[in-house]
Image (cartoon, rainbow, N blue to C red; front, side, top):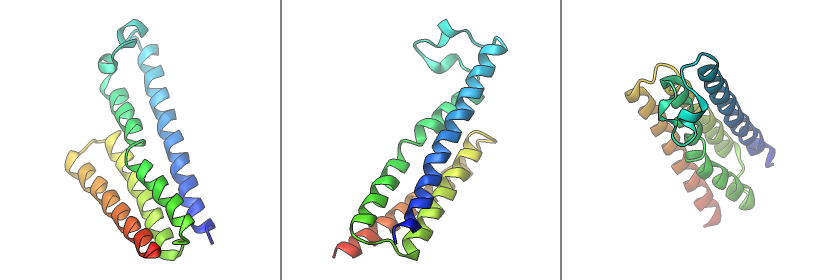
Length: 136
């Protein structure tokens, strides 16, 4: 049943919206505090404070690996690779993205952030193998 994959997909989409809200709040706060003026960031976002730039970078990240995730989910549904293993992998990926965001916009410890990112990559590779095996 494809519902096993719908829930982590919806959770990933919700997380993307949540990161977008964090970004909007951090940018709004930067304007409200006077740290930055609209004309300073109309062309380049480099003038935003670090917290807003980190949120912006993380929001952009949500359109990198997650795009592969969404493609794999659609392919998995198409080839009926929708078992518990694929669902578990999908949830692990979502959790890895949440952890990545919390590290990225929080303490931003690069080694930890990189390790969590790597977990997400490995999970996507496993999902790809699952789809491939279903096709073969």
